Amino acid sequence: MTAADLGKDPEQVAAMFTEVAKGYDRTNTVLSGGNATLWRIATVKALDPQPGERILDIAAGTGTSSVAIAKSGAEVVALDFSAGMVEEGRKRHPELTFVEGDAEALPFPPQSFDAVTISFGLRNVNNPQLAIGEMYRVLKPGGRLVICEFSHPDRAVVKGSYKAYLKYVMPAIAKVTSSNPEAYTYLMDSIREWPTQDVLAQWLRAAGFTRVAYRNLTGGIVALHRARAPESKKVRGSVAERRARPASPSTQANQTVTGSHR
Ligand SMILES: C[S@@+](CC[C@H](N)C(=O)[O-])C[C@H]1O[C@@H](n2cnc3c(N)ncnc32)[C@H](O)[C@@H]1O
Image (cartoon, rainbow, N blue to C red; front, side, top):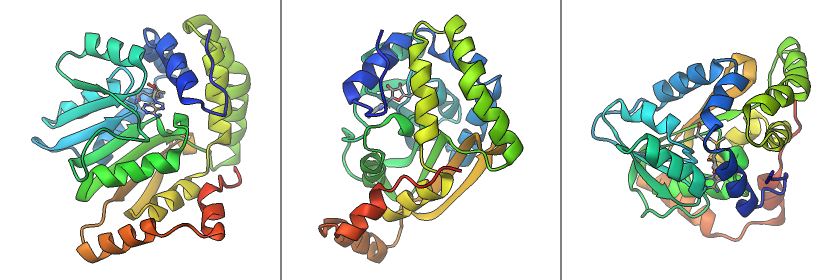
């Protein structure tokens, strides 16, 4: 059985998802107590896909998130680096375009998508800031980004029950419903270590995104971040210039900070 650790070695993460691919969506639905559907609806609403648009769904897994977007009439490209997830996705959704690829090195030319989204994927990426930079690169000027990810509850009451849920309830359910319950220990640890809503927003601004905002879903168990690739040539130019400059030690420290968890 493969279960990745918080070093998030890409090969281990991909192998882990390949092992859970067949039962992934069922386990997800049970573990989220049905909330997964609501989170997906909120994500698609924030993305606001339009017929004819080209949209990239990164870390798409078996394509459950992509199908919901494709219903709008947009052309959706579902990308994932786990061969097993992609294989399962192609079987379930032959109507979608699946691409096996890495979020840290997207196999697409610059400015090729109207919108980019990632659901419950960024936390698993080895270098999330690199992946955010790639999202910026492939978005057209003015393009939309929506990130749906587990986050940190903001109210004590939600925080307390969620901690207990992660520690006791989730492992027990995963034992019964998943083919690889160890993978869910990783899930719990990776949620705990994930940066706060504000730190993720700061990463997006540092990558050059504008109009960065987030909203909490289910009391902050999940956060929905939205941002835009700047339209103005001048702003894009200064982002490119800033990126080309070698980072100063203080900037580097800022960019790798994971923030204090609430
Ligand atoms: C929890 S699943 C989410 C799947 C889907 N987006 C959903 O909402 O159901 C996370 C996915 O991220 C993928 N993943 C992790 N790191 C990745 C990377 N660097 N590049 C592409 N996919 C990655 C995994 O293979 C896995 O399928």
